[in-house]
Length: 74
Length: 198
Image (cartoon, rainbow over all chains, first blue to last red; front, side):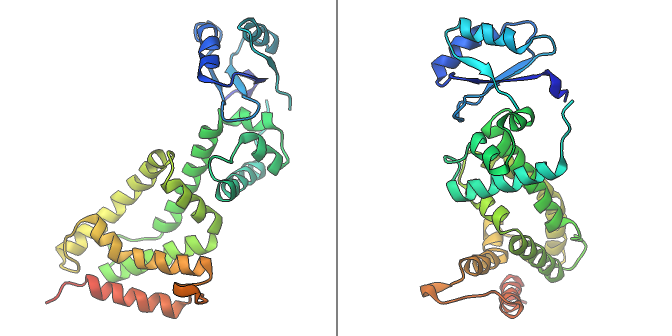
C-alpha cells in the first residue's frame, strides 16, 4: 500500500443523502481509485486514494457539492 | 512513505479491544481510539478505511492468534480424551491470559461483525477438528452427534468455569477461583459423559 496516495479530510458528509450528493462526483472521477467516508466518526473522515490528485483538488470538488471539507492533518 | 511501527499497531489493537469491551461497538470511534493511543486520527485512517474496517481487521488478527494458540500444538492423531484435554488446556490458557480479547470476542458474537470474523475462525478449526473427530468416531471413542450437542457437553462446562472465574463468583455470588483440580475434575466428567457405553 502506497500511503502517499491516501488523502484524508474532515468533512460534514454525515447522512446517506450527503454521501449520495458527493458520490455522483467522486465515483466517476478518473483519478480517484477508491474513496470512503466514515459516517460513524465525529469528523466524518473522507478517505480518497488517488496517485494524482492533491488535497486542494478534492476540497474544491466536495465544497462544490455544498459540503465542508478540510485536510485532516497528522 | 510513512513507516508502520509494529509497537503502535499492537497498541492500537489492544486499545481498540479495550474500548469495545468498555463502551460497546456503539461507543467506539476512530477519534476516541486515536486519543486513547496518543496518535493522530490521520495515522489511523491511513491504515483503516473506517470504524468497521478497523474493528474487523483487529478481530481477524486476534482470531488468527487465538486459532494459533488453540490449534498450534494440537495433534489430530491424539486419542479422543488426550486431544480434548489438550483443547481444554489451550482454550483455558488463551482465555486466562487474554481476558480483554476474550471479552471482545464475547461482544463480537452478538454483533454484525460476527459473520466475517467467525468464518475465519471456523474454517481453520473445521479442518483440524474434523480429522480429529472423524478418527475418534471411527475408533468408537465417541458417538456421532450434532455439533451443538457435542459442543454443549465437550466445551460449554469449561467456558462456564472460566466465566465464573472472570466474574470472581459462581452461583449465588459465592466467591470462585478456578484451579487445576476443579478444571480437571470437570474434564473427567465430560469425558465420562462422552464415552459411549459398552
